[in-house]
Length: 223
Image 1 (cartoon, one colour):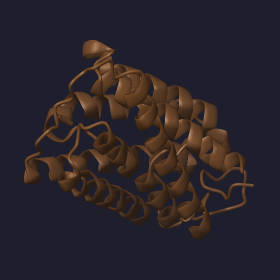
Image 2: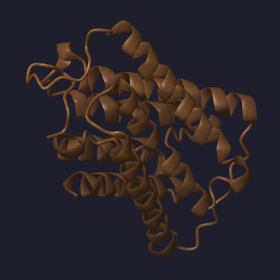
Image 3: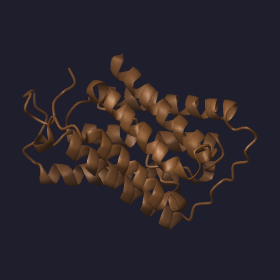
């Protein structure tokens, strides 16, 4: 239950920040920084509980990585992530839209899909290295690395694909009108493909670093 609550809260505040700071423009030009800073804070707050996935693509990657999560837990994580994103979007729309007219972004299929694949690949690659690699076990920089990766992605390809990188956030963006339902498949499949590619490549390069109960291992089951 603690792990599910951790995933709910982290995804909720991340999504709420995306909707309020970026979609409704409350942070102005600093929307990407607001998103990155909140993600840094929530990763540090929740990382020791649930590994701070906040993203179905990341939960899938951890399952394939072979540590921290079971199949049943993965689906539970994904369920609460999507619920949290939906509730955050509804709250943002109800309390913080202030009559702002949100212009639905018309994504160009190929550039948007490639952007989602590439930058979710980068995000998951960073997470696998800072949160599961034995060489980085016990590091203090994992939250900053993850948060700054997302902020950088928003600055770089936000105008191309919205830099969603997260199927749960894609649902929220539909609810607040930033993404059309007809185009939701682009960030969902793009993020899943990017995350899958990153973890498979990571596992290929770390064939001996499987799930372990050893405290010195970077990858162990959640107790």
